Amino acid sequence: MAKRYRVGIIGCGIGRSHIVEGYATHKDKYEVACLCDLDEKRLNAVADEFNISKRTRSSDELMSMPDIDIIDICTPPAIHTSLILKALASGKHVVCEKPLTGSLAELDEVVAAEKIAKGSLMPIFQYRYGDGVQQARRIIESGLAGKPYVGTAETLWNRDATYYDNPWRGRWATELGGVLMTHAIHLHDMLTYLMGPVDRVFARTDTRVNAIEVEDCVSASLLMENGALVSLTSTLGSQEEISRLRLAFENVTFESNHAAYSPGDGPWRIIPANEEVGRKIEALVSEMAPVGRRFNGQMEAFYHALEKNEPPPVRTSDARRSLELVTAIYHSSDTNSDIRLPIGSDHPKYKSWRP
Image (cartoon, rainbow, N blue to C red):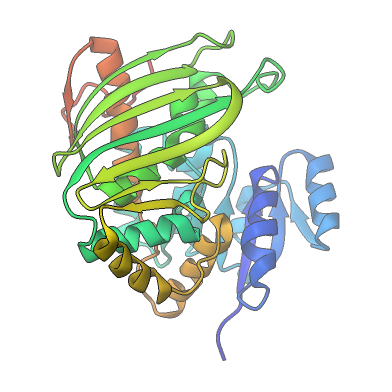
């Protein structure tokens, strides 16, 4: 009989979304057995909503529970690294929201800990899941798309002073970054998921929308390892919220849906170069089973990886690619220069991208 994994969640803000979309939709695979939050009112509200009797305000207490299989970390970003290291040391599997760590140096520390840990670590990148993005991935991997030409990734969202009326948001020490880190990071991951690694970055960042420490506007130009040219645009001052990815290949152009928080959902616009390519694409995607969206799809994929004793579907190497791009964008903006990836331990921002 397949195992049903018992989950302990730290942080009941985004943690509630993990329950609604990721765990409650897979009750045969997971049981949320304990919740942890410093805010007792929020802790009790979410625990009562989902009939979770076991609750604590201590992450150490949660990690010491022998019947918990998975620790799911949904706290503000600044404490992700310490919680990951503790959870791995406790022998648990670990799921962690973005950003996985606060620097590439911290990420390498996590990688070293993961290599000797009993459990596995899965970063959250839920935009990879949905019929639209998975169909595009399948077409590209099959070779049907052909040579990649250009791409655009737009994260045009809206956040005002009310959103930043919070003790940890908008501050380098606690949020670790702005629109690039907290909002656009998922769409940028979806971009590299489809287009591959980045070779060079030139970028500008600015704070134009809110009176905060961190950036809320970004423009970046990327040269991908495969030669494609990509532009990134992000802001928190858009009056209409959209997330949009458009990729032009030799034989097909893809355009995501424009849903701000679920651009991986289908249908995508898939525009073939001719009827023959269109027939081949139609035949290929017709064989694909539906893919769960966002947390639903990622948690299902994680379960199957655990059952097969395989690496998680999203890995620390994916988080490194994401955080190298973040680091390169900040460094390019600071120095007004073109930055080559990957970024090693000798880089000026290896230990921290924060000013």
